[in-house]
Length: 226
Image (cartoon, rainbow, N blue to C red; front, side, top):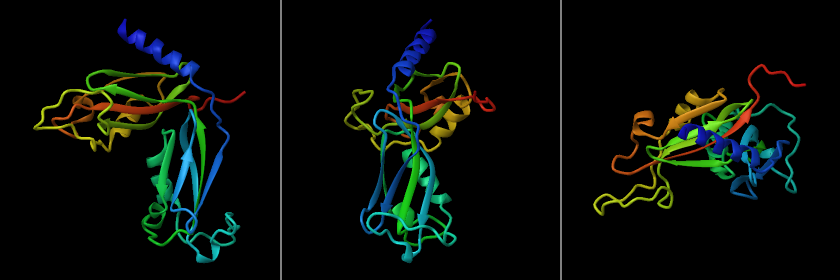
């Protein structure tokens, strides 16, 4: 009965969540004008689609606009794409320093500009305290987990009285949380995951943790559009 109530609650949140714009948006950052790139989705969740970068000094931004690419890229933008997705997907907003582009292996040369294409997907960020159960629901569509962490990065969420000898860690992150959630939930219509050390392991012994996650609902693979 409790599981059904959680499903109904999640369904209502999904139905009544704000309307989002899935039209691709672009963010251009010029190295000499801004030290970081900022992506925002008011009321929605970021989903990075692609990234273009330039490492040629001759292709610096002019009046805030990127020049046309007339030559092959010096370096692959794939490593930068991975960084952007890790830092931005499933969040309402993100801030990525241009240093992430400069230091992306194997190029390790300075980016003169970086342009990211992304969409704002329907969804919200959820928090589930340790030992409680997260329920993801998508009705006729299927789940795609965008972001997840089992640990603790805030003292305000899932508060508890910690002994003075062992204050709660607020830098507790489990790097494979997203993979665990994706393996259990991606492609399913409904999914339930318990926020526990048995499922995710224990990244910070002595600290009570919580599961932070976000997801969106997508059409099942192979479903044709009308």
